[in-house]
Length: 451
RNA sequence: GCCGGGAUAGGGUAGUGGUUAUCCUGUGGGACUGUGGAUCCCUCGAGUCGGGUUCGAAUCCCGGUCCCGGCCCCA
Image 1 (cartoon, rainbow, N blue to C red):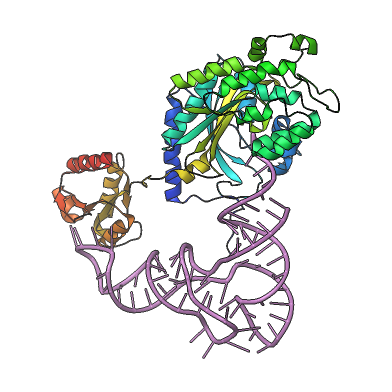
Image 2: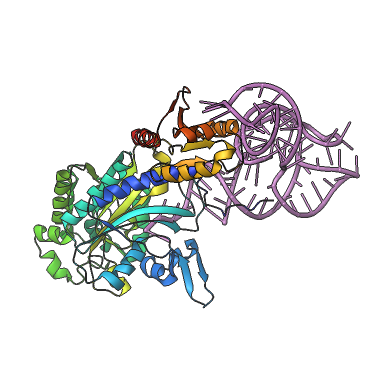
């Protein structure tokens, strides 16, 4: 009986590995043209790093264990927290903003299904050190560039959490997470019923998350302006108004005295407007969509997601937003915008990639093996060269070359060596010619360039 | 964690309780120690695992594992 792979893991055969590396290289090339630098963090971290950020609830989906020193260790379930941990401990004093990217495997103990595995790869970037419409727009434009560099079309949806958080602040805390879930799950009817039940149906939440596209922002601004006048109808008690607003302290009286414009600014909607305009300058088409909430864990402003065109429910391939995590890990507060790309899902969509180029085979008669190996060594400085290790005769070597898919075979025997003119054989068609070593080398290099 | 469908050589498959498990492809070798994918011959290689029923199980039953699809979840 053979040993199986652990559930939810995959082997990548040469063709798959080549495709993945090829796409990863395209994305790396693209992200580096934006001036981002690669970073790498450990595959495992202290468990605490992830529970601080995401809460104890994630424990059951984390691969964790005690090491031999009794430490609680976790295989990383994502890469934002490790990168921010690294930032806090080693990069806090570098010039801002910091532009970092990463590509690495992550682990989650989940039920595998289409596009979801227990070991999966994330490609992501973080722009650390500023909370400006400019940096948010850059992050989104970068994400868009990465996805298209993989040869994929995606629809971008951008949203903003300021207003939703404020409205949620008017809702009894016990109802909030349920409401959030319904928004996230797009359970519109249940959401409406629930809002009505708790007397919050007049706050504009349903209207807000229905807002899509160009006019969405104006309408959101209207909702925001009306909001201060509103209180919960017959609710069980006063909700913790304003608590969800990230500027921590504002009394009720002061709040309601504000003008609509101030409220709008405080919610960040004006900045969001700027960001959307900048996206235009970046040449990115994105749909404004206040339904994007991304779980609301620690995102503070703009949030965004991307969906691959032409796929169904599994189509989300990117998610990100603006957050403040540095202080959680003991650093000075720093706003950052980042995103992660689901590399495996992208690979499921990518098509039209060729495979690796087959090598050139150097075939030789057994009596000149030593000379053949020397020649192979020379050629290998420029081109992939394969020589027989099975002790096969010349005919069998050619047969093997054919099944490797080789397009060229160099043939040498005593005669070719004596004349100093190896034979180059075109496998397709069977043309052969005798060349000097230098001519041979040039010819092969050219042939390799073309493809 | 839940529901459903699966699992037979490396890949693809046939086989409804009965000798030695079918075929294709593939691997290695040979015909063929100076010219390829053809042909022929030989070889290698399999019923997911564990229990049960039975004189006898790839086949029927139970459980585990893994895969596929869906639910939950998705930082």
